Length: 55
Length: 465
Image (cartoon, chains in turn purple, green):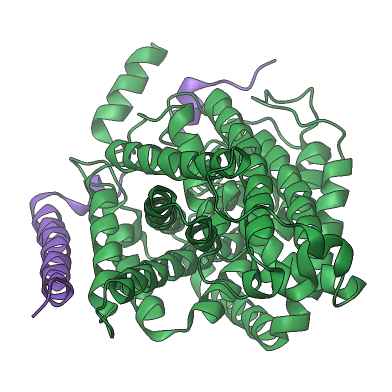
């Protein structure tokens, strides 16, 4: 087995790891925090507070 | 009192973090696009010869300069995640906004998939050079998507700082190649004799046909405005980063055409998979070969990284406005990223990367981008008509209005014709998809949208309202 064949297995392993890290964190976050808080972002607040469209 | 209200609001609500500066915006825009210098643009030479390739380079450059100017003006005012989607929502209407949101997600997700396919192809090429034939590209395609999605999941500052570093290296690689060839580092001299011997092998129609792939030089620069909710000063950073980005790309595109056309015969250049890397191989200089391989890999990864960032912001914004299920409109409480949108788009990118041919994926990405540019033309006209210059503050005002809009619409029409010449079936299929999606939105989804909440900019009423 040459280095490229080993790299194929390493790549599969890392892919699984990064996928698992995201999924586990997503499940943990969703079960820890209230969904209303997680979806509480509103579009206009930054603009409304930071800049006022007055000339 | 106003400050107290603001603090209270911010503690109760999760928002995306405002941590980015103009350099990150430059890295996002140029990072998405620069891969087009490393591959793809050269098919324009195959369609019409060297002169056609150069004309396509500059005509597409003009098109995208118009895009950058128009986008900078509107985005400096509509500073919200979702970019053109938020612009359409405020200026045109909900159905247009839904379609623009889909254009963005499709264009960026497919471009991400194309980049991942390219990573696999590049590694297969290197493995082949080292004597390993038949490399399984799938694990590397999957890894590039998974790693970059994870990086995006963990935070926007790290993601775009990473993009800044690898994009700068990829851009410098092009400059180094150009200077090295100019100062004699190449064992093969530049040869432009085909310009006089065989200027337009397919006639004038070849120039039109080449325009399709000329778009590759700049496709995605408009993605800068997706970061509008995460920059510290949107009105300053977005126009500055976007205009610096298009200037960078115009320089890089012209250098790329010059070096590649001078070193590689146009018949071969028109079919090459990695033209800049191939040009470095032609020089016979092993240092340049390594540098341009690194540049190609970095440009590809930077593009995929920026695409994940932009597609997830567009999807997140649509979820936040209930144009899609509101579940997608969530912000991570620690990393402050649209984490559900990022994770949801991963399998979609994987399906395209593992199951569709590269040219089809690229064509669907270009078509979605073109539809978005067409939207920008009448969006700009409506924006200036509804809110003239003396009614709201703009971070940037583009010059010569409406000339850039007219030029953009004319060039978009020409590009549609060019795409139709080569990929007419895909063009019609894509339009059918958006028509069906629009019907679904109008008859099924719009009932869930909170109509009063979606217009968020503190603007005066439009003229004639």
